[in-house]
Image (tube, rainbow, N blue to C red; front, top):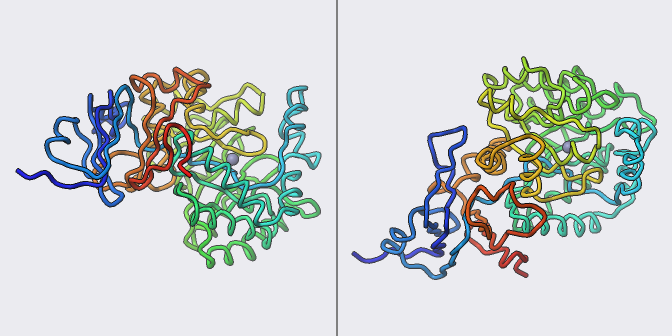
Length: 415
Ligand SMILES: [Zn+2]
């Protein structure tokens, strides 16, 4: 029988982690000595190398000997477009200042808002591009990016336009989120600003098509649960999908809002009552846990991922990259989740692939090596998936493909 032609064949991996499995808890769908056939940017088949070589011939062949192949990582939570840095604030946290104290004194988010308002669109684009290159070299192929350092309609537009420019010109898949309700701008009361967001910003942003999601910081010192629900309710009416920063520092009833509104994801969840986590199984809200962010706040508090997993929830992990938590690698998050949250390697792998895709409503397009999905893949220089979370601080990414195109080779972005 004549061999069928495909664009790319990746062969000889130790393990090909397909995530195509009926076991939705710890199943990885591992193929030993396997690989992947790709055509026209999509997965044609993940199978044993022997079967692939029998069925297909290809224009390009990639040898993944002594490596493992996974779906490209999905980072479902970043604040990647901003100006400046907050290295000094981090030092003050080391000396004992709390995140919310800093915010109350007009530092934190507000400091970044001031810097970002002064920055040109071009400089935001250039720094965003560099950061996305780092994401790529760390194996992430889909990245969510929130606005929220403008806090004024023209400035929020500036950031969302930058995110959409990155979406157009960068090889990563980008998911833009409007987060005008990130903090209350100085000089306004929360209720005045909530009206601005609901009546002025949201309708314009929904009309512009610049955002897929709307997110809110539901927290003491930011927006309470009623304000958060009003903003998200309006966003839903205007056709946006919903996310929420819930219960990061206190039980602010964020998880309750998420359950009531059936948001796509609820993120942080450090202080959420177990009752609300239990409800997420019915409301199908995907919990996003952000251990790097917890570590950077230096308060020793983490979400209870073990409880979520025991409840059968599809726990996702993200970086929460921001000026207060400067890290972009999902493999580093994996190492933290293993150590701080006691998540097993299979749980961690699911959390940065298929579950993270679910947190963005993209589980039908990315996050597994299912036939017909985007050919977004990463090859890692480790012998088995058990090394994910086990090793950290060394670069193990070899190749990254997006839509079947090689975008990182030998750990470096292809120019
Ligand atoms: Zn965040």
